[in-house]
Amino acid sequence: QVQLVESGGGLVQAGGSLRLSCAASGSLFSGNRMAWHRQAPGKQRELVASISSGGSTNYAESVKGRFTISRDNLQNTVSLQMNSLKPEDTAVYYCAVWRFGRSSYDYWGQGTQVTVSS
Image 1 (cartoon, helix red, strand yellow):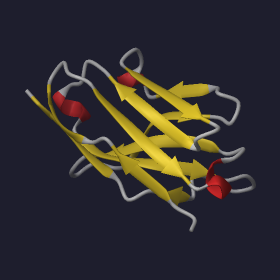
Image 2 (cartoon, rainbow, N blue to C red):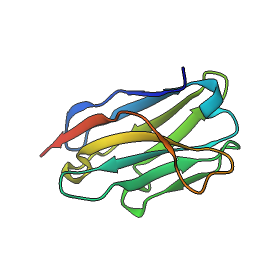
Image 3 (tube, one colour):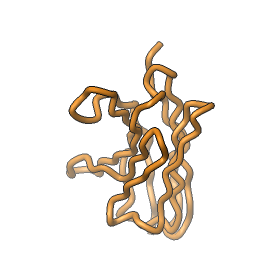
Image 4 (cartoon, one colour):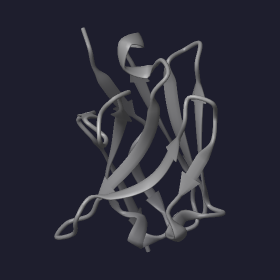
């Protein structure tokens, strides 16, 4: 079954840390760029961080220095380590894949809620 399954969301106080994980079926993961996006209430979905199949990373300015994206090409997982969390990081976080030959991220997980209290 082709799927992305996120885990690791929850409630944390400002300044705390969370680690999100996304397990992908092999057909989705291998050779493809993976990313984490987020969507806060009333706001558009935004790219948080992405990682290529070779390990090159990109981050939104708002999370640089605080978040780290990584991937395990043997376990077919992509993770997002989030440190120094702020209330404005509160959102539903989605794992996504940009499959080869597609024009954008085209396969999404179901999302996991991250809530940061002040």
